[in-house]
Image 1 (cartoon, rainbow, N blue to C red):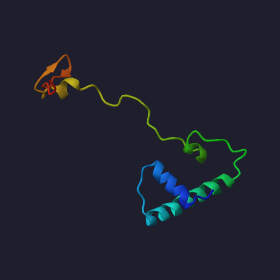
Image 2 (cartoon, rainbow, N blue to C red):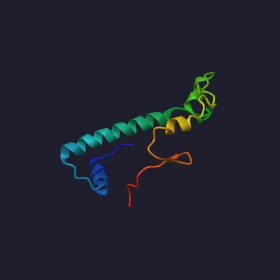
Image 3 (spheres, one colour):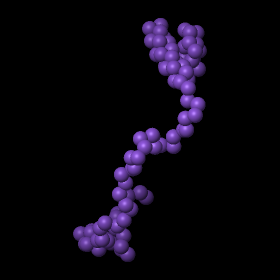
Image 4 (cartoon, one colour):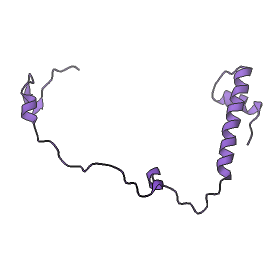
Length: 99
């Protein structure tokens, strides 16, 4: 697929862009380069290849290195709230900032 200057002018009009001639020519080249890459990707035979849910699956035996979801620190709420100016039922009390 190859775009023309008329295509660029129509796209610019639809997008409400004001392009001068050099900008239009540069955009034409960039858009055609993009569509060339898309055509190259379409030419690749992908039949028989299972789609991936995640790219890490392609690596094989590598597992995600996530730590276990376990509690590693004790609850220190009371110690942390000792320096607070106001606390009520385990919650910090702050001044009202929105009326």
